[in-house]
Image 1 (cartoon, rainbow, N blue to C red):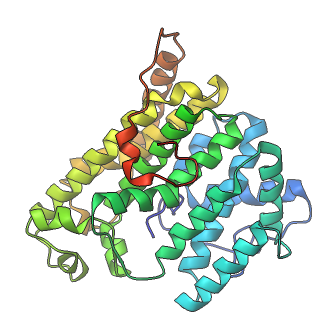
Image 2: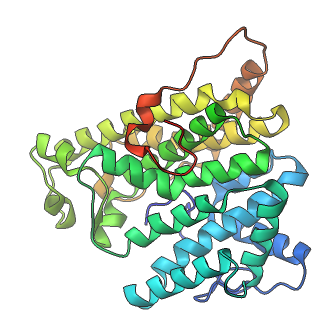
Length: 334
């Protein structure tokens, strides 16, 4: 699925520190678990690994554990033998997080992170709900449904990172949700072909219909390239609205940790930039941001971090309409 913690590029996976089909990561101590989680992060996401280097050491380990848990949830869904087995594994994981079932080492470490940071476990449960929805046929109908999906599988991760970073203001949480949503929309635009091969289309049907397209056109590969590019551009424009909102909320993040989140935001946003430079040809395969470009975007992030460090008399409030589709979800204040 097109999750923000999905693999940046194809890589081989071994059992040394990476979740297997049962989600087990061999570890004897808490420190071992942090090391194993850091290895999972380094193996599966170069972008997030790069951004994590800018976090304070005290936060870096907890962030790696959070990432490893997100990878575990994703893998339990995608690497299980069938949908029924995947649902069973995800249900078992829910029970471990609720502490009604003995937790595997990774979950036990995550629960220690929860205690240290006062993280709301409902965010993790909502993440599982989002991933579980991918076990069935996925044909997103409209933008509202798209935003809800992006909240579940990525906005919740932003909320959990807020707990790790010590951000608890409602405005700060709202902007963090928006960064997750923006990143997830970027992933969806990048992975149209890959998702279609799995029988999933996250591009809203109503947007496709306006361009004379349908979900079926994407699934069978017959979609007109130019028409589809136009629709994907519209989704990238929508993602940009959420990126802009996320930028406005960076000031709620402690200065030392802020740079890491700005780096993650710029490097991830670059995926959409490079996708557009290639003509938004989403059926040609996954767009990868080259290393030299990541260096450039890190430099841009550092300049942005400096500007964000300057005092302002006031900062714009959160645009509540961005969350109209999310009323009633954990961490959403509208």
